[in-house]
Length: 232
Image (cartoon, rainbow, N blue to C red):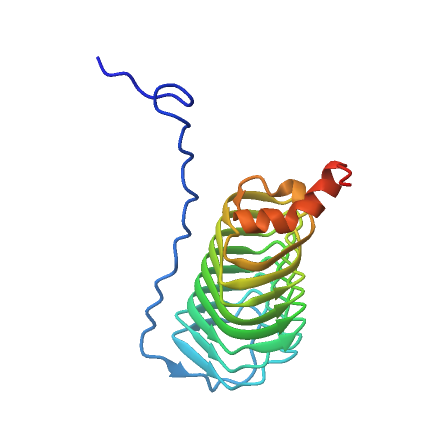
């Protein structure tokens, strides 16, 4: 009868399971109709529409649904999109400060080359989302739920993940500066592609994440301070 190898017995150290990869969206947009309907409306329903090079700043689309849509080159300063649902859509070249997406749902979405600052995403739900390229400053992900999300080739400055739940989230070839993970819950979060990896708060919440040896050495002083270890 064959004996099963146990950690430290007969088979050497046990091999820990690899971090689970995020599932990426597969967005295939249909033929789109250009939007000619004026300003966004609260609880509006937008299906198969392309918003191109529009100034949406200050408009109110709270609770709206965007299905199979493309938003390209639009300004979204202070645009109100709280509780909006963005599904199977591609958002390219968005720019703006203070965009309000609190409690919004983004599912099967690609966000490409955005330049956003102070975007409010607290309480939001992101599932199968890729954020590719661009620069995102002071994103507010407090109490948000991120599942199958990839941050790729982008710069994240002081993102706030306080109290958020992150599952199967990857940081690929991107900069993560001054991140706040206070009270966050992480599961299968791959931080190895974040260079630099700067954690301003919440080092004690990184259980459930994987980092590289080099990142561990970079974080060593902060980890020592977190644990109350004096290094002389």
